Image 1: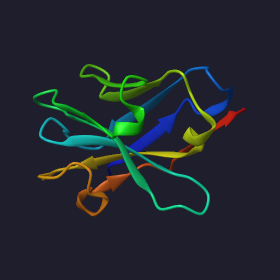
Image 2 (image 1 turned 180 degrees about the vertical axis):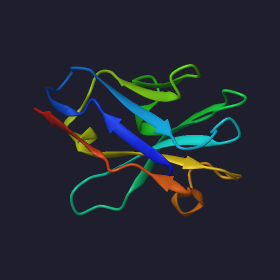
Image 3 (image 1 turned 90 degrees about the vertical axis):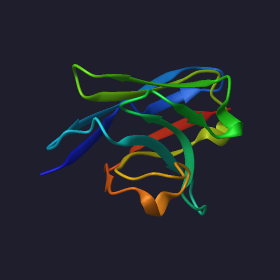
Length: 124
């Protein structure tokens, strides 16, 4: 079965860095878009970044541009989210997701598979 397993979350001070990983298994993801979403306490889940596996096309939400970098390792079937210059407002559970037909990569409902999430906490 399809599995997306996130790792790399933790507690970091403001200005610090973390790298999240999403290991994908159970099918071929070459035609998929891989996305990162996050959900802060009391807030809706929101789009963070995405990468199309075949073309490498990347998208970011405005609040993370210049600070976060999404990348992929084809050999390891893994997607990464490098997060630098972290801010307290980045605190959230971060989810990896896979979308087979994503005309709009920011739309959560279009994603077919989700990981269990990893907590990122940024202290001030």
